[in-house]
Image 1 (tube, helix red, strand yellow):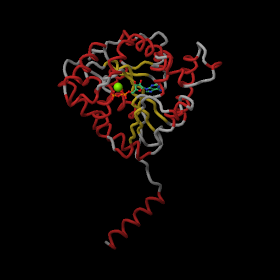
Image 2 (tube, rainbow, N blue to C red):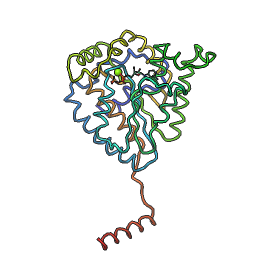
Image 3 (cartoon, rainbow, N blue to C red):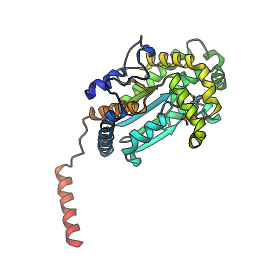
Length: 292
Ligand code: ATP
Ligand code: MG
């Protein structure tokens, strides 16, 4: 199984007819077990560490990873396992929960914009501004809390948000930010299993909430919102990766390979010194040797 094929398989870019049901949450393509994927995941994590070092040294591009999913789809697991190798100094994770009063008092891109990664860094958004066309769309009362001028709340609002997101991401790309967007695609059945495990295993109890179970009744609304979001915001330069999420090992494999692939395609090289800098370095080195 070729690396590029796996990355391409789940990549959605400019597909106005994209259908969520065309990707099976339990898909593992040609792999049959976690054992088959293990060494590939390890190799991916190791390569990611090297590439992150290079990204940091070059200090030019930044990478933004966006993770979106229904509850228990494994966003935390991705951050814990796939990103386990990267240097914490050059990587920041932000989790976006229900907005505070201060956040509600600003435009919908404000709170995430303040957390964008700087050059040389990887930024991870655990949920993001995309919640503004997902949970806010599924629950109209959340939009009401944003207190927009009534004349702006029209049926075109969601399309306007899509266009604004596309424009915002284009702006980031033009400023050297590589954007990788992942939708971890979980089935309702597998979510039930994972939520039950959180009830049944004491060390997982802290993870479960009433809301997780309540939101399940809106499953179809969420699926529609996700599909519409992907149709409108998957672009050539900022595609969505719709990653099957019923098998955690497969999710980890796909995400690791997509991130590695994106970093490889930057063709980064460690910064080279010019002649004067090299001479200077040689001089300092000699001094260090001489003076101890
Ligand atoms: P966990 O895996 O720990 O459950 P989580 O990301 O689901 O992680 P929670 O605290 O359970 O974290 O949920 C955060 C909640 O905040 C989600 O229900 C999400 O939809 C909601 N949320 C995030 N952004 C917004 C937003 N802009 N407006 C309204 N609700 C939001
Ligand atoms: Mg949750």
